[in-house]
Image 1 (cartoon, helix red, strand yellow):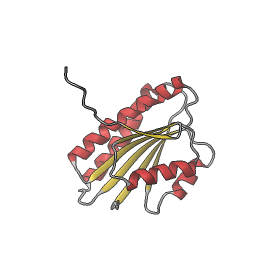
Image 2 (cartoon, helix red, strand yellow):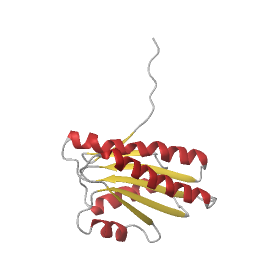
Image 3 (cartoon, rainbow, N blue to C red):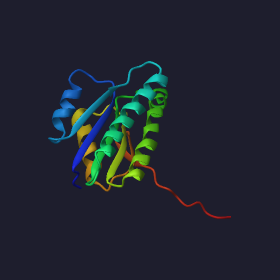
Image 4 (cartoon, rainbow, N blue to C red):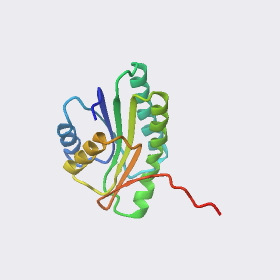
Length: 158
């Protein structure tokens, strides 16, 4: 899939040099935005994350999107425990904002990609590239090396 613009917003706690490595490994022309997520309370951090993503989406939409644009928000890191994964999972609420932006302008393709398995930079870049190449799924989670995508199912009628 070809996009006129591509933005990657990385949420997480960087190890030394990770952001630079990620920026260098993504294709030329990809705009990278980084938001650090620390160990503290996520109350204020969630508002900051949503505010930054919202501002980016507004800027893109105001410019008059007439060709496909991809925005990927990636939550990265190593959630060593289920408790930590659940704590960070609240940031997945940004996926709703991304879906709404796509509804406002179908040329704006947006994805939330959760990678809390401690994957190295090369694997993260591979995942982002893989998701960009597919018919974009709005939400993807990687757990224990598996790609998980929500799909609606039909329940049997009584």
